[in-house]
Amino acid sequence: MTDLNQPMLDYAKTRLPGDGRITWKQADALALPFGDQSFDAVACQFGAMFFPDRVAGYKEARRVLKPGGHFIFNVWDRISENDFADVVTQALAEIFPDDPPRFMARTPHGYHDVDQIRADLKAAGFSDVSVDIVDARSKAPSARDAAIAYCQGTPLKNEIEARDASRMEEATTKATDAVARRFGNGAVDGRIRAFVITAPR
Image (cartoon, rainbow, N blue to C red; front, side, top):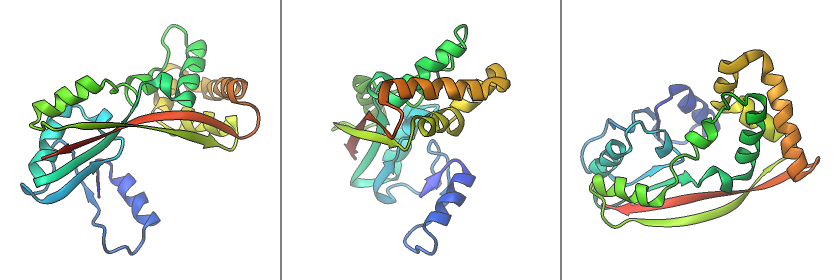
């Protein structure tokens, strides 16, 4: 199991203590510290959107795969197909109309063009690419929980603070109100959509 961020790996270890089947390693997806043809499968969980050079990352995945191995990864669909992210982003645009925080639309939900994904994989040497759409539901105990998760628990927090750190509570409340108007004041439930991409070597 790899991640660019060592603290993320440290936290993951605490969730699976003593599982000897897992090796934890800090690694850059664009320069994997593994030999050629080392693995039967390479999986990337909602990470490709963050690669500064996706073709380079895909080439690395292909390099470490054995012949016949599979590269499997997922990405979010456009933000309009993911309710909470979309509602929160629109609410924050009302707080900062001149420079709306667009992290969610730009990055997690910014790599959704299936034709582009196929082209990037082809450029990396993959030829037989399949894409599956996965629809599911995202749930939170309350609108406030959903708003805090997005405004204070993702890099969206950095964009809010860069505009005006003193308005974090105002931004979170605005997002809470927007989610509550759309989904109610109790437990909330919104749609999410992602793509699962499979590319054999």
